[in-house]
Image: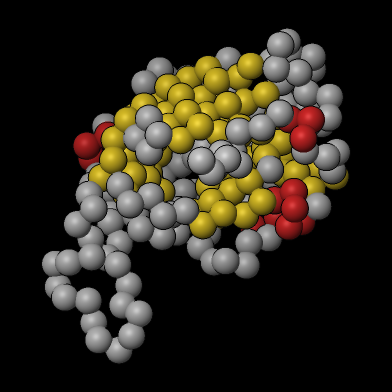
Length: 221
């Protein structure tokens, strides 16, 4: 059985430099290039991208996009200093990040004031968009970057969502899970059932962790 590379002890990750990403208040304007905000989950249909042609012959019309949409609950839960995610839609379990240097992060108790998530990983889905709709009206953070495989730390932002609306991202948008400000939060998740995932290990590739603020410390717009 293949080992789940997204579940591990925080101490398995090294101490690295911290790169703080800007926090932006999520509005219809600020998020329009990434996706959009939703009052109700059924306001938008998750976009499914047709399977690409590998040669000069085109994919037949109406084919290559028949996998449909997976739906389930995305659970985000802090255990001490460690943030875990569980996505029922695609049966995924993840360590999303930590509130302090992973060498000192505790799963048993909160050892520091929780004002950030140290983010080690991001990914995008080339097969379709994704919807996160909060089932409890509590604030959450969502890290994101625009499409392109040449991801850079300075191209990443974190959106502050107040919990009154859901969030939809287009296909190919870099992201991670949703980060609750409080101890735990549940979201309705809809995404492409094929669930192709292109990943970037931030720590390995750039030698740093991204710090996404968990307090309302916005950059000027």
